[in-house]
Amino acid sequence: VKNEDYQVLIEDMGNDGEGIGHVQGMTVFVKDAVVGDLAEVKIVKVKKNIAYGRLMKLITPSPYRVEPVCDKAKRCGGCTMQQVSYEQQLEYKWNKVKNCLQRIGKMENVEAIMEKPAYGMNNPFHYRNKAQFPVGRDKNGNVVIGFYAGRSHDIIDTESCAIGAPVNDKIVAIVRSFIEDNHISTYDEETGRGLVRHILIRVGFTTKEIMVCLVTNGNKLPHSEILIDELVKIDGMTSICLNVNMENTNRILGDKCITLWGQPYITDYIGDIKYQISPLSFYQVNPVQTNVLYNKALEYADLSGDETVWDMYCGIGTISLFLAQKAKKVYGVEIVPQAIDDARHNAEINGITNAEFFVGKAEEVVPDIYKKGGDGSHADIVVVDPPRKGCDQVLLDTLVHMAPERIVYVSCDPATLARDVKILQEKGYEAKKVAVVDQFCHSGHVECVTLLQRKNT
Ligand code: SAH
Image (cartoon, rainbow, N blue to C red):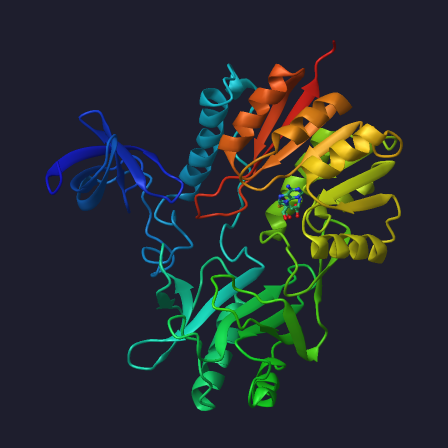
């Protein structure tokens, strides 16, 4: 009943870090509650089978509760799980994969094939190599730079972020003073006016190279030389640029970049492979754990050097180039043309000549190549790393026809992974191993890699 208070035991957690419990058979979502809490909850919204509640009082706090490191954690939309101990976060993510594979994937005995525990970080803070801070003004005209509050575009002014690179704080402080001292306007989403929209910072964790990119609603930044003078004092500064976005849109970046100082890109390494990263490049945000994830994919692929490998949804070719070191030939396919430009370029700067890339939808390009026969129509190993919606059915059908010995499925959504694993298990493959690798510590996002082996038929 709406507006009534109930005692609720929080039994699980949702994707956005909310607690989940039950009241009289109905599932209740409670923001800020932690698995293991016994809480007094006021019901604020009731739908057919589910309800939403507000945490009024902790009757018995969960043993998994910890004090968030960041004082903005409760409001910021970024870290939704900082109030949960890191061990418990890993446990939650592991269970989430297990439950999906059991319930949606209809797999029995999943625990037997899941590596335990999830691969977490020794220090799950300051792990991100990329930050995007929205810039605006509060109602009194003061500059605000920070993060969007959960599910909104209200900017929470933030001086320090617990998961970003430590140097971000200094950069943000410099940009803040620059905007204030030089009376630079900031973008207003309502009116579409004002200049500075976002600060994008990228840091090469291996190379220590830094990029600062101001996203602007215009082609020029007045007094930019003053900003440059301050920023270049920071060790490792490599690239200072503008990204022009004049559209009234939720998209952060526009298509055009202007270099103000230094190079138009920074470089970084994952394992032995070097990558050039521009403001627009897609690049994994947690380089330490990406290395763990890709090594796991490589281990599952179990290459001897003679194999032909397909990397579906290859982005800038990160996995492809990783595998190319151990394979005879790697083919990659990706829908975004600029990403394929990056992939080809990254292959070149690493002297990798056995990787070939295609632009297009995997579900169109691959069936086409398969039907024509010849190069690329055969695969010994296939790696897929699809977006959250999972693999297209047409692609899965083609994979089954291509009949690779092993399919290594990298997934950022265990629900669609489980759906696709079920399909592949019905068509001659068997899931052999699963590893959960935490890429997004303190958020609810779950990443894992699954090995599927062709059954001997
Ligand atoms: N494997 C890459 C990126 C994976 S993210 C890495 O590790 O860096 C998923 C990628 O799939 C994105 O780059 C996205 O642009 C691409 N994508 C989305 N739909 C696609 C489709 N239908 N066909 C091919 N690529 C697609």
